[in-house]
Image (cartoon, rainbow, N blue to C red):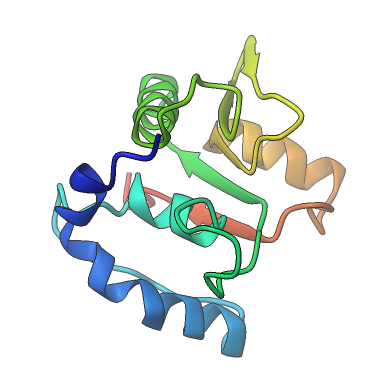
Length: 139
């Protein structure tokens, strides 16, 4: 069961339509917002089309979120899975050096920047990935 009460409290929710439009029109967007607004947890779920029901107008996308540290990657995946009322590995999973918890239905995968760089070296197109989110890219 999706925890809409927690999701609705995140301020970045109001920016989601513009973010969707920017990705559809130009293929890229930059979102800058203060800590605690939902950038790490709400945005990837929304971009993957996991928050609405059928016919909500949002496309189903495969999203990879890059975090600078392993602990942050695991924590982000756990939080997103909790918001969806699921276990990590179902709709949201993570991959860090030495550990991968990603099921066949996962639409959001949180990885470390090192894992993302390795994937880019093997496949510059990142086949099967629709959106890449670089979180905390200033680090």
